[in-house]
Length: 454
Image (cartoon, rainbow, N blue to C red):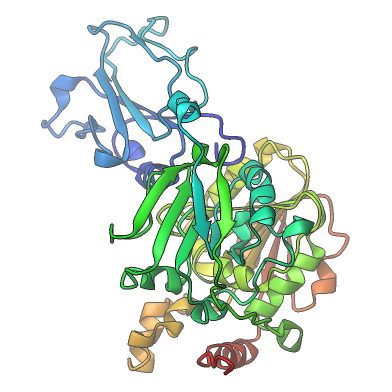
């Protein structure tokens, strides 16, 4: 669904099995993905009785899924037609004994891809004047569509890895390295945001910068900002015929190139090294928290055909290994997951499906820094005692080798990127333990205040 944009149906039994879908439904809601939820249920008369597997499943997902019905054998058949709706939808099917397996209840043959709004073609082309572009969370086909517009615009672009823009040669002079630090130096009048909501703190701080105009072009319906003053959100179809022009005055953004070669054993340094060994044509899925932020900082260019994906709808760490495996299923090139240790621990059961996938080129990279180290970078937590911070970080000394053995996967623990060259053509778990001192030294130097030249 994430990779090819085709609708996906998930079928569950009743009770807590249906409730397990909630993290995925929330993520699909905020990413505007067409997820179909088919939950089996006990007879309606069982509700409220405490009968096994009988919970209140109708409208279980609240605002996160459109309810299609609470259907049982006494209701008329349901037909589902092609739709432009690109949000999750939920059909609850109540079953009674004896089960009749040949009842015609729901016809899914008409379900198709979300269709573009036909009225968009009737509108006059939009003209936008902007002096800074932020890009994040674009499907590779969307990146290919918008890249010529950005090259013609000529405005500076700060792009996350998931923007999938780093592989376009014409955009290289416009792509500004440095991420958050570079943005601190920017003084834009009009920001054009493309794709998903960015992960940078600078973006969140735009809440208070009401004089800065923000235009969002996105497949979701979310502006990513709570403020409404000087903010507009346009559907992706508005890119058709879009006329972009750069503002007369530059936004003043500075280029900050992190010297990651000096900090190769650090976490960001490892991200730079991974970009060098991931081969052309690979599909890369980035974990949330530190991995995606560090890859955004480390990425310079990509090899031909490398695609980046992530779960940035709600920014959670639930089900990241599972999402990676789903996004990898139909891709014949190498597939790389780069995920933190806590995210992997949240999804230990995910590899059960690998035996059914027949995919020899799965590489699960776990950045094991012994806990949730993103919390150690939160300013408000720095004054806590070492004991309290250890609890918040969920510190541990676990190895992921037994996890790989449990699922019959090859395993490599390494501190040398050359170990990742010429990997076996089998699914493999790669555990990396970055140097904590090097990581702390890098971030301490990198987070110094930006001083603008006079």
